[in-house]
Length: 175
Image (tube, rainbow, N blue to C red; front, side, top):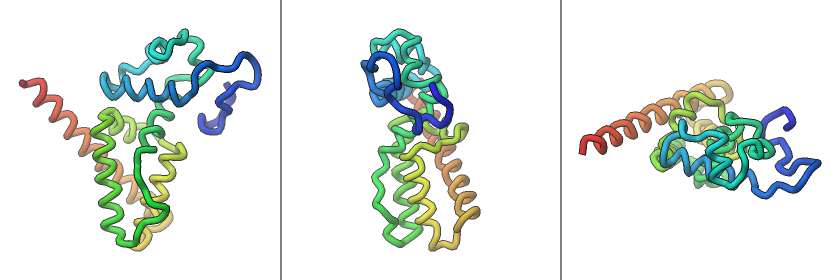
């Protein structure tokens, strides 16, 4: 597999037989496993088995677990429903997208852990980031200060949801 970020690599190899699966199928299986059992349950062997491939065959699609996790995070970021540009009330715009973040993270409780520990530069994640930065501009947060504010806000939301999820799991275990 070539170097560079996963989103810039060809999905179909230049040589050899045509792959029987798509990256999207593989990513969906990884997301499904993580949603039910947690991100630690996601392994190349497990995902390959779930999609009906041999463990080594999965490497034709992604070069390793790091690529798979990056693709999974970006697939989840595709769930944001964002207009082309923020409507104009920066507080309401930001509040709306952060409520979406919270709902998405509750659907995918493994996301807060990865969102805090992994850089996420996929196209869907960048769309989210660009929307938030545009929403922050009227508040005077531009360039570096906007990025810093967004990083802090995202970390707070991720930590908050991680705590909510942990409390829900604990209260469910007590029953």
